[in-house]
Image 1 (cartoon, rainbow, N blue to C red):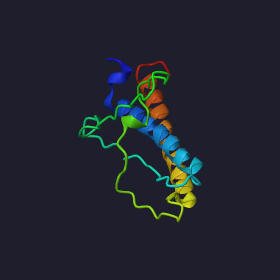
Image 2 (image 1 turned 180 degrees about the horizontal axis):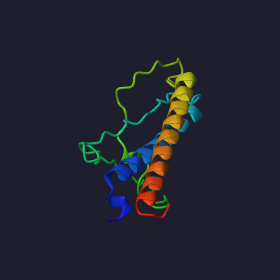
Image 3 (image 1 turned 30 degrees about the horizontal axis):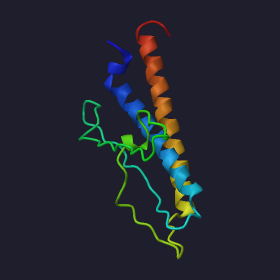
Image 4 (image 1 turned 30 degrees about the vertical axis):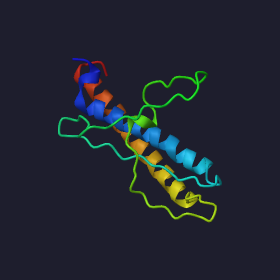
Length: 135
């Protein structure tokens, strides 16, 4: 059995990837806090079934190349996770809806959650090493 076949580790890896992508989205929101008509984005947290597989279907959005000179996208990215369309935002007169306090709070919470998941992942690997007599 490969280590990638263990449902718990697969679930933790997916969660870590989601936190990484969410951090990118949140930092884009902060970076565009003064951009007129910018609407902040957020990602929907992945749900898992009892086997550790993602529950339901997580749709992917294909990136569109508008010029032959554009670099083709690699796998993953923010389009690997659904976006949260229900988030309500208060818009400023310039059309920008980024609230820096909320974005920084989300970013800090995201970082703490990521650290918790990486801790669980490393402890799980240590447990497996101990179980097979390598640790």
